[in-house]
Each structure stands twice: as C-alpha cells, then as structure tokens.
Image (cartoon, rainbow, N blue to C red; front, side, top):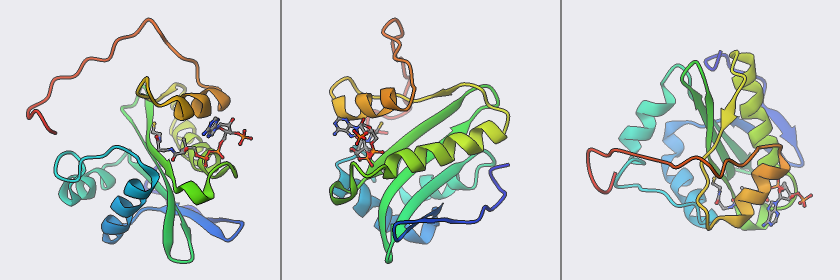
Length: 155
Ligand SMILES: CC(C)(COP(=O)(O)OP(=O)(O)OC[C@H]1O[C@@H](n2cnc3c(N)ncnc32)[C@H](O)[C@@H]1OP(=O)(O)O)[C@@H](O)C(=O)NCCC(=O)NCCS
C-alpha cells in the first residue's frame, strides 16, 4: 500500500508528495525552522532516515512550495496500529490547514492499509500540538505512561 505512488496534491501553490532522501538537508532545515525536536546525530541521521523510508510501511510525506520544504508528516504501522509523527510546518505557513492536510493524507494511507487505530505521541509541554491533534479528532489518554528502552542514551 504505502509503496503505491499517488498523484501529488496541489493546493495553494504547494504540493504534498513523498519525501526523497536527497532532500535530507532540506528536511533538517525544515525541522529546525519549525522547532521540531530531532536528533540528526542520533535517530535522525541520514542513514537512519534513508533506511526508514524504504520500509514497507513507511509513509513519509512532505509539502513543497517552489522548491522549499514547508511541511512534513510521517507515518508507519505495525499491522495493528498506525503512528503519526514528525508533523511540522514552517511558522510562516501555519494556521492555514497545511498540517491538517498532511496528517489527513497519512491517515488515508494508513486506513487504506487496513489500519483502524492511529496514534501519536506528544510531549506534555507541546500545547499547540495537543490542540492540533485534539482538533483532528484524536483522544487524549491520561492513564497511559510512555516507556522506552534505548541502546544508546542519545539515540
Ligand atoms: C502543530 C503544527 C504542526 C500545526 O501546523 P498548522 O499547519 O499550523 O496546523 P493547521 O493549520 O492544520 O491547524 C489545524 C487546527 O489545529 C489547531 N491549532 C494549530 N496550531 C495551533 C496553535 N498554535 N494554537 C492553538 N491551536 C492550534 C487549530 O484548531 C487549527 O485550526 P484553526 O486554525 O482553524 O483554528 C505546527 O504548529 C508546528 O509545526 N509546530 C512545531 C512542530 C511540532 O511541535 N510538531 C508536533 C510534533 S507531535
């Protein structure tokens, strides 16, 4: 499913399409500009992202306007549950529905893959993103704690 290339969507001068690894530097620039926490020397190295986008269930979408990456939303699934992450929009393009369009497209592709539950993890301090996901119909679970086990402290 996620391997099927879809026709890019053009809206208001930008296009939503699949991310290409040759755009890695532009992606990091986007995340820096958007203030999205990321680890270019940890989990977000070019090697790691290159490997992730080639995974069968990867849905790595970006919004591009006139050669600049202005938004991103990544998705994946484990056959049971879908995950959305790396939703970011440059400040000058916010509040015009861009992140909504990106997330809706990831959701559609997950749904097409037979996934009925879609989840995302948001840090408590990130009030804007909490509001954003609530607005898109996501339900908050205050009774769940997030546990991780890392091979390296800074991964
Ligand atoms: C969160 C983020 C992706 C939203 O992008 P966006 O393109 O502005 O979102 P949309 O325009 O689609 O917003 C849809 C709705 O979400 C809510 N929303 C979005 N940003 C909001 C904000 N700063 N404050 C309050 N509500 C907000 C609003 O209800 C909005 O609808 P409205 O504009 O009609 O009121 C963007 O602010 C961002 O890049 N933040 C930094 C990166 C980040 O933390 N990402 C989340 C990782 S989980």
